Length: 188
Image (cartoon, rainbow, N blue to C red; front, side, top):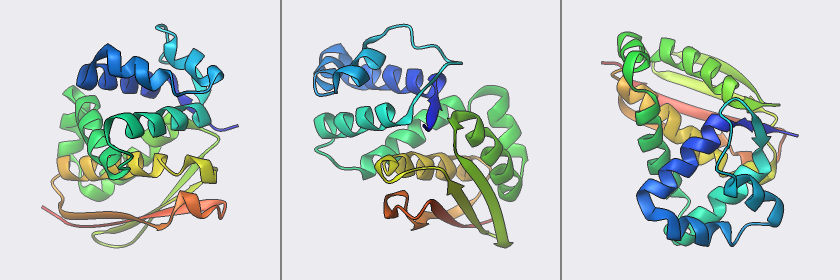
């Protein structure tokens, strides 16, 4: 079973409540399966505890259905906002000082701390290009791809990259046992 760190779950809950309020949050909860609802209804989601990724993705899907008319691209924008907040303080300064290539390697390591049961390989075939290969995600986790795009776009932007393009070459939903995110950018 693939799991996600509680800090990501907690930050997502907080972001939805801040953006839309408790009433909308409750309407999202009402659409969830009972097992998933029990996770998201729990006010004490622990940052260091691992939670089922399937439940997190179900929550994201219902959130998009209620608040974005099902527009999955909205998850990229929301993820960028969330990651901008997470990449604050000392970590933001650290990213700003690094080159985009350095930041991708560091972010791959950070990304590994958010998912258990997922492996990430970084391949940089030439300057301004990278392929992030994920193994472990399953077809039902396809929405996580939108969050991953937002994560890398924001991290590259903070590091000074310009003209950033991030898209899956092999999507999580393709169910091939791996997925590949292609990244292109121009340096500062």
